[in-house]
Image 1 (tube, rainbow, N blue to C red):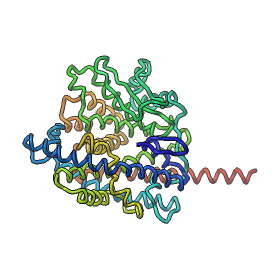
Image 2 (image 1 turned 60 degrees about the vertical axis):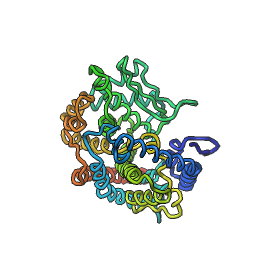
Image 3 (image 1 turned 30 degrees about the vertical axis):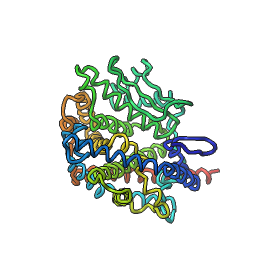
Image 4 (image 1 turned 180 degrees about the horizontal axis):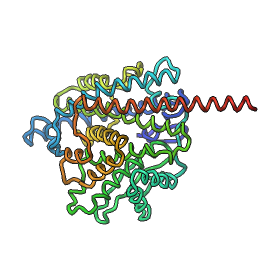
Length: 437
């Protein structure tokens, strides 16, 4: 799917970056175009999904399962947790994460001086500033990225430097290049390869840190004898990648010499950490319902989707007159069509990443030592055992999620206080300078 903006065709993912721009009317225009484009394929996607649900239900029953959800859990080799654990995680996120997002959105609405906070206001910097540009080109991104990773652990920087020497990085965006980003483990040479499309955004910085986490994970396991030991379950591979994003954030001075911009970038990162969790829960809970009720009608499906979406949405954001966009918002999540039930792993890994970062703040050396030890295990242990090796717990209960949520919330509050102090100092310095002049 693409839309036209300023005479150029761009993917919805690339167009969504424009939602960070200060011009509110332009953000609304882009938001509208994105969602109108999604609606163009509504009937085709609805028909496709009707067929997928019926075929998947039949597959499950042919294999002796009561429903496709139970079949999928076996297919995905989920031995460490059950469907009931996922439902508990959904509830924990609704109870502990949504209130924090409400609090942040109230502050955002006040800071932007808006009567209503609309969905196209959620990605703009709360200070109303333009998008951050942490690097100039792909080489600058890579050089700074290696320096940043070396500050976490010297070996991390050395691994990415080796990849640069061996031409195992393709970072620059260029015409005709496939969109997206990923890390590809090359089993014969036992080297990782990172592919992405860098365009000077904060998102690109996060992508490099994320994919570097995957690359370092594979490199640390390159000498494990069995290839199966070097193929990690997503709950573990994404733990490596999402943790690297948070660990690197503590060393982003490399990218942001300006203190205010550094703080803005960190706030943006932590807000994204919280925002993704309710959406993951929404998509997963929706699929639990769909395959438990395979004979549902389209209207029943739409009603259930809207109920679930509302439960995991901030009450502060005003979606009035946008209901028709909300009804089929799940169509944009490719996982539902191509890899059903594969998505909750990101939520599990994100919580694990927060837990490791929390330890890093408390005991840096030990946290990194345990993180590396866990990565080196590859897939030679269960998911729970690998999390334990990393020094964290593999839990889904509300008490545990509340502990992690409080930590992130306090970090964001601290950063906001720091940013306010920096802005006051800058304003005071400006006044003094003008007075002296």
